[in-house]
Amino acid sequence: MENKDYWIWLDDGEDHLESLVCPVLIEAYQLRALIEKAKRKEWERVMTHITDNFQYYIEGTNDGFIFHKDRWDALKSGKGEGE
Image (cartoon, rainbow, N blue to C red; front, side, top):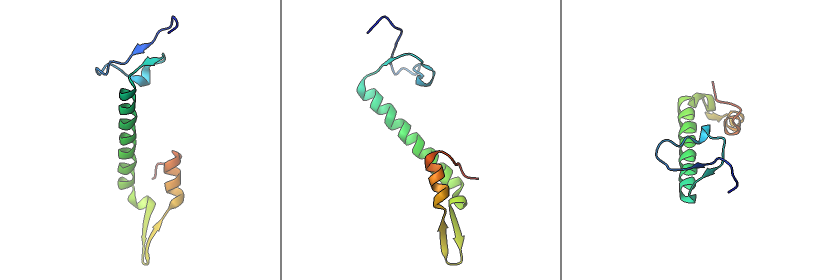
């Protein structure tokens, strides 16, 4: 590497990627694990949101249910978080 500052990923609890502004040296398997963890965390967040706001997305009627696809699409795109 050139003569630049960089962070060596140790996975010791002191690595905070969100605060780093320099290149990070990390093993591929550790990076894959971080990506999978982030995906699970995001999935859990979305599912918690949907559960907490179920009626916002699914409206009961006399004939069944109405699925508000526009609201769902807004959630998926990050533009809407429900009521």
